Image (spheres, rainbow, N blue to C red):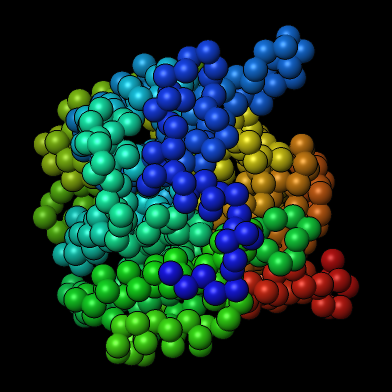
Length: 579
């Protein structure tokens, strides 16, 4: 591979771990067998990510366990690979059982359209992952320096076009699966034959895989519910009627950054051309291989495709891609987006089947005293003859319901007090959060646990301003890595320290523009006080059909961000005066 400007002596520690891992084997087997500790060795924690699991510890318990001279309360997050977010009722029941048996009695829908289990202890890790595979699902490459879960719209039944695009999400997912047998050896007990390790076990990835994670998403205009511009490789389906013509190719999106390091920034992808369906796998593979060959393997903070492109230029990238293909992409086709949220409630398709999209705050599925949500969905899964569809906005569609079964499902929704989406305010429906504390080791502030109370306060302010019915996107994340895609939200809170957040404003409602830092290190009280006059101003002076993100840019509260490199630029004099 090329790796120009990179010397072996300067490779990051993770690159060296991958190189000697024997295609992701490391000493994971030995670490799982050592029950004297709840952890695995540091090098194996890096490799476990490729197998779909992260080692974590309960940060609520850290201080007390340290006082008692105990090791941290280690456990593992396990993520499922589920292209397009499809789950059959039988699979739902199997995952539900695993969550109650081995995890923390909850499932969580992620922003990559799949499930996560939390608080799985080491002695249960193999049983959990084996159980997921028994459900005909997998965890391989759900994390790690590989192509992650491929996302797309959440309902292929809406039209033949939607079905075709969903099939492409599965094809792309299968095409980029790691080929190493390490996963099957470790988690399914497949024996490795001595001396048979191929010299090139990974024909696409190579022995050190990618420099960092790689994300692919497909969307169908005018809906942009997957936030296509946030993907390393975004595919915009172009159709004539219900027939798929091809895809506009968008490259270089990514959300993560690091506080106080301007060389790191979120970036929206660039649309570089169009290809036909028959060309897609070739195009996608070569884009991934360019990142494999040229991505930064010395500094992981500069290792995503967005930095590979910006360190050279988008023109360089297009030329390199065309040279590898041996032909040029066609010019991009026209398209437009209207929103990046989900469409809630009941929808009937052309065949008379029903689909219900429910709102689930932060994607958390668990029972509470007020709402036995997990039990209710379990009972629905027992009678449901269609399937379940997870969305990238952490919501759930109960799909393909027959007319005869619809009343039975409605009765169960009522019995288990699962509310219909219209009971929630628009700003709540469009809110997302990452997990953050207590399990995420990167979290600087609360996210999922603070969101319900914060939303209640924000709803009161919005209602007082006369904006109760206004669609406004809000996303909260416990650190700047951007797991809830905050930088393309009209309002974003990004954790800075415990109880304090940076406030970002001004993204496009359809995910087509980044937001901008407005205030730094605010408490929740200060955020409410800061937003209140902005909402009042918006209510008084907004133009017809103008979204909040567009208004704060037009009114000069923040500058428009046209490219990732502008994200950290000092605000203009106009914006400072407006603030």
